[in-house]
Length: 249
Image 1 (cartoon, rainbow, N blue to C red):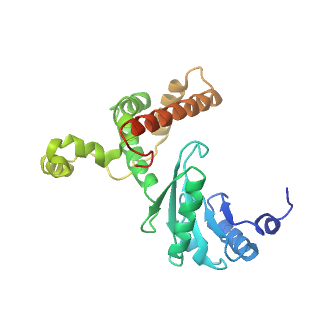
Image 2 (tube, rainbow, N blue to C red; image 1 turned 90 degrees about the horizontal axis):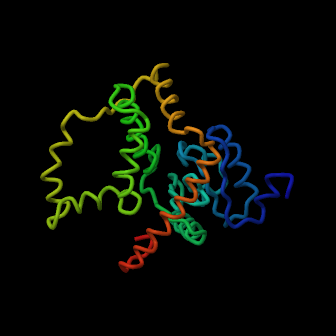
Image 3 (cartoon, rainbow, N blue to C red; image 1 turned 120 degrees about the horizontal axis):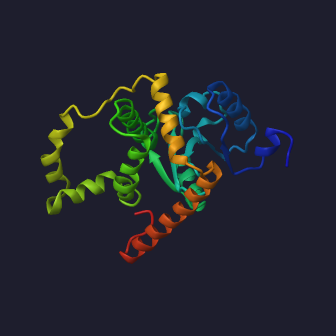
């Protein structure tokens, strides 16, 4: 245990900052971290909502600075999104990939510096649609979660969206799927703007999720989540190995 930030990072080869999402705080932290760190140290940030070009602006040697955005629970979910800023060197991206891979994670290089990166942009779209369905009385929070966890969510956990739809196209694959179902994208099914967070909508969401919790505590459900994630990950690894695939394929 050390008493100063400078002592903490001085001899590190890799540094991961996980401070709250405040630009002023990140700017200050990374100015201090990068000034005290070894010149060759790779510096990462767990931010999910800030862009690296913004908070690495005052950093010393920003070419070695990246975003390494993990997902909760970080100790179980392997995905980490790596994002470079406008001054990040390609070598730093590759070094970060190597480090995260050695930690048992699955690095995903985000090719462009965009707000929300990849995963959170997808999750935000689903979250907005779910809130509209509650707001319009189409479904409860529990019914929406059931639609995911007993349907698409099972496929997403090991196959993702594009590969799932490729199989839906039959032997002709994605081209057939796009020609058959692509026009449906123009149908006015979905709501792109976020719904107004009225008191009623907030109450409906809170009441619905409280009903889903039932008698279970948050801590108990966190244990259930972790145990289930471990089981799913192990099942996916085993099945992929059986079919001649690596876990990261």
